[in-house]
Length: 593
Image (cartoon, rainbow, N blue to C red; front, side):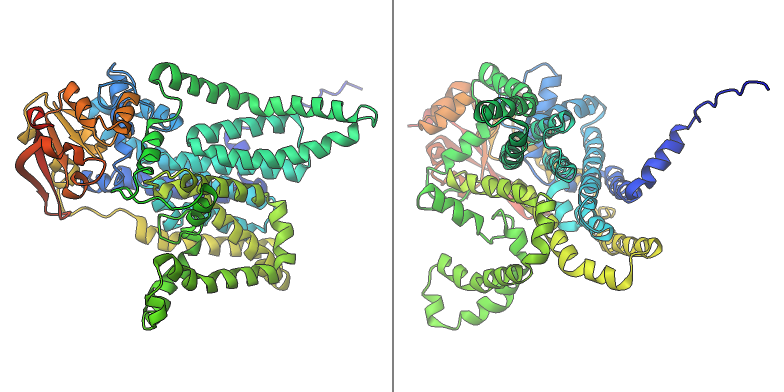
């Protein structure tokens, strides 16, 4: 009998392996979320120039673009050419450096590429949320969580639109959560693979947005508790304390190693290249908080802990960290409750904080009542989904800004609170509402497909109807960024130094002029010290400032009124489409006191 030839392993094509992977655990739904996100952002990237620029509505984004261009042109990491700066998030700046190598092809070309990159990050975030949630939740609810983020207009307009670093930070936070859920589900808190993943995820999040350190701290404390418990049973009682600490130290070193190396290198660069450990933007905003009322807001009164608590319950839309979660009640309060309560004298005599306390007391009582009544259903699911350390990180991050009187807090800071709200609602709905329904109607595979397809349609149809770009009625030259830039070029001489507050877009679009930021958000550490010491005028006299563009409210504020005696002029820029005006002043050093 002839010997049998051993069977060779079946060769599988890349396409075959990809199809099998997408079919595993419903990965195709995550791929669909990514595809839909890329389709939308590709449409925005290919839109006419005017519509494209409306997508980049945040002036701060252009700080990144101008700095990236300066670096690539050999001027160093600087916005104003007066010295190095670190007023940005490091990982997003590195990505901008890669994208803006295309800037010689035209100023709008890298912007189009960046839109697609944001679409990639936003779609991947929804996919990661879906993958993590599917380990704990029913499949339709897990898909609803991913879809509510990727195809939710509120999340998209907050995190993706504008060109800031938040889409990358949201992806990093979702990735950290996925690592924690995987670790918790497998019950392997000290496996080398999980330790590496946790360390890299935490480092990635901190570099994506530096305040991500609070989320890393929340998840780190959660891991530390479980690692401490896991270390105990493996040791002998006689040497238990010493060996336990030694074992825990080795595990902790593995977790912290990526962050200590990468974040440590970034901090060393801050100190030795820029001369400021903390980003100059954070230093400036904390200084604003020492001035009382200012154009950038007013700090809360009281000790730091009380300020943090006040900030956490601030219901003002796009201001308070948890305002998104309170938004439904805010609409009810503003449209129904407040108008009716205004008829009572006692309500009119109250201060603003007291009126808000009265108006929002029913909301918090209702919330606590519902959560308490259903706690036996949702609490085990929330624990299994590792939402508690995420919530702790969100509290620390949100409370920090008001505790240190950090003014000019922007709505995209609260991406973590917004994402946690989506996740908690998904976990609560799954435990309290959806699983009983699925038990009643069955969970057969064909019905599951039906539920999941319906979920996707419910999010996708209204989202694309609202978010899809439409042709702009004006040529790109009429956009305020470009019209304002050409006006500055017309009314100033070549090479002139022009100072603005909110100088990002003009720093990118104005040609042949030296644009500097008066607010110092991406300035030099030397300028920050000059602001604190009241030497703003001396600083600009020494550096040869020629013009100032500033509105009346800013000009007369405590921060900038020291410039008032030095200014003269009567040239006004007015953009009729936006209904916005600003005055150009000549900076005359001889007029300064």
